[in-house]
Length: 291
Length: 260
Image (tube, rainbow over all chains, first blue to last red; front, side, top):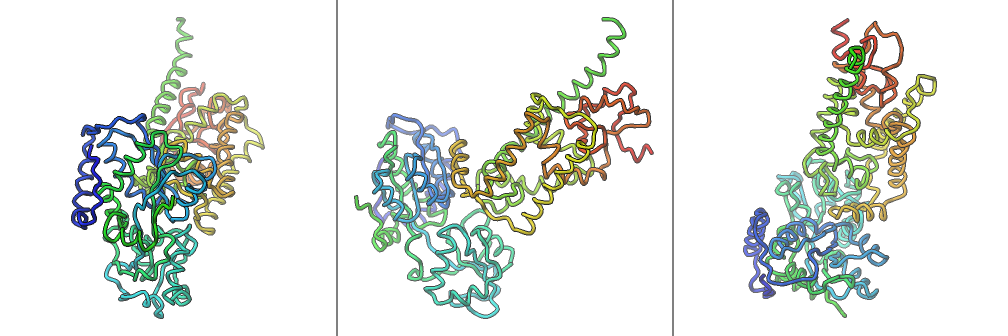
């Protein structure tokens, strides 16, 4: 098994990520491929919990890890805050990848997590139906009279709150709320409404535009990073105290943070932690395990 | 074997063979629809399951994964117009479970009285409630959806992070299904909203199991019916269990309008 850590950012670029993701997808499509693991672990299954938003990246990454090592990943993806609450209570898992730095720190402080590392970052974008009928070019445009805005203010955190904070920072919150023709409770439904043309613009995480349901069905307009609320941007991955085989948990995390593993996160619309951009964000947002 | 005994056992064996054929069909449909059915009760984030699959975040559910949602809701109404409530008797995975449980039920309620004329209508109340929640109230998510997860831990996490209203609906469904251990087929006969919808459309179906004018109201058919009814009456699912049991040979299957 390749144990080399490819953390040199100079090795990473978009083409490399896409090439690895395509290769990984091909690899996972050949179930007969033999595991090439040279390591012996004390268990054949590893339990991994993550924020549900990461599922589109973790599912193929886990298949690839199994193909390489023969280790079965028992994976659960759900709202990170709820999983974190369970973990802070009596629930147990071996590896946890959550959103919001504070959650990882809380698990460390409670003695539930041994250590964590930055995994990836999210970003927010403006999305419009194909053809951008309202000619949206900038976040300020969502405040223009007559623009039909689709929002999900009641979406589970950080969905609604993060977008509200972003709009407040941009000074468009009040007018955008007045312009809102849909005020939903689910960010995925927001995307569906937008694709159907029920509105002219919405603000979502870029990862949603990469989901198979919505891929290539919208126009994407960047939002300046200084408007993003910092809390929901970083995702971390860490080994839990209840990990049966710490070496296996570390090996899995090494794979997820390798160029090959991170390719799946880039494909799913995240900024990989080991990319130039990810390293910059890790420093800016101070995503590090204080120990 | 004496000739008389051979004659009387023939309808019974024919009925048993049909019943086995139905069970095998139910098992086949459970293999196709079972996972979706299970997710609908135990992991669907919405109060009304099977209705909002197109924007459900639970990505491992077959309703969304295999696009069952569209096929099911297109084919189900068509199946009712042709076969009546045959879905309940031949295809529904929940129906199979409650029917098997009902074998243990001490109260079969295969009787005709005022109570049994009124109680089956309760499922229309269930249907009305479902339509109100779905169309008027809106389908809000009432649990933290476990998008992907292991079988048991996902169910445990779903219950752990569910809102009270989701717990109420789930325990009502499970309680009604479990009631089938006491009152035969309680869920299907008295509570199932889908059954209510199909029952409302059943009179328009082409094919029916029905009684002809040879019927002398002996109720032999009622005594073997899992749904505690008689051919073509309220709750008849065209299961065909009664086809061979009528001593008057008054039960048949076909289009009664054409016969008329």
